[in-house]
Amino acid sequence: MSNLRSVVRGVGGYLPDRIVTNEDLTATVDTSDEWIVARTGIRERRIVADGELTSHMAIEAAKRALEHAQIDAEDIDLIVLATSTPDQTFPATAVTVQAELGITEGAAFDVQAVCSGFVFALATADNYLKGGQFKRALVIGAEAFSRILDWEDRSTCVLFGDGAGALVIEAQKPNGALLERGVLATTLRSDGRYRDKLYVDGGPSSTGTVGHLRMDGPEVFRHAVTKISDVILETLQKAELTPADIDWFVPHQANKRILDGAARRLGLERERLVMTVDKHANTSAASIPLALMTACTDGRIKEGDLVLLEAMGGGFTWGALLIRW
Image (cartoon, rainbow, N blue to C red):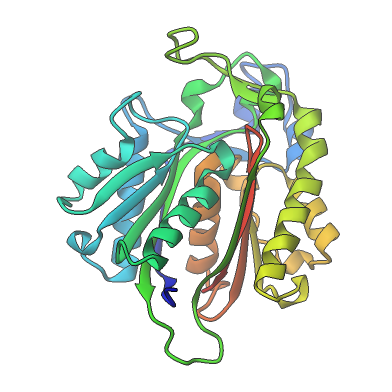
């Protein structure tokens, strides 16, 4: 059995230039800043420019992660890109990123688990690296959710934003340190019985159209805190750790009330919760790497810290991942 660990070498993110505030949205839908903030914690979100694609954001986030890692693009032999808003039905957006970075070896592919996508992508890359099949990976979450929103549906259009984030991870052998760095444990779950609670009402084989996002908000909220908490505790148990051991909790940035509820259920102080939903809104698969980028840039997350990631998305899909940074 391999004793390799997937160690984080770099992190990067990209946000489109255009900022849309809650006040801006009141000009087109019946809502208010007070209503949105009270129910979600969101104050603004970023929206892609005309002609700006998911791949454009992913490439920029990847370049910044590589720069942070001080690794050349040609040293990457695996790209796993999580997105629900690919440039095209096929090929995978990951191969566009691969080509634009000048990488001609290894493999590149997309995964689709909606808001859980980054956790699924990171767990996938971790297994490839631990198995010795690849050495270094770019794991990217990138979304242009504004392109699948119904901008007349005030219950959904206020919730989402666009952006991309990326991690560079590398397979390393343990060096005998007391606190070995790397991915320590992962847990992934899905339950298709709830697929009609959060979905897009279009697709190539159903309508031949892109469709719009539809959500049963109360049902999603009802399931979220319990499912999130359970999968976190299972992941911690695998690593023989407890919530008290966590330095930073970096959840999918969906809704402030869900994040606060999950933290309370785990007994985590607010100070250990990384929250960016107020500035980014829900960027689906991009939300966790963007939050990681923010917390690394401002100095909160440091080498050796124990970082817990979790997410829940349409499907339902959900999962958690524990990293020694």
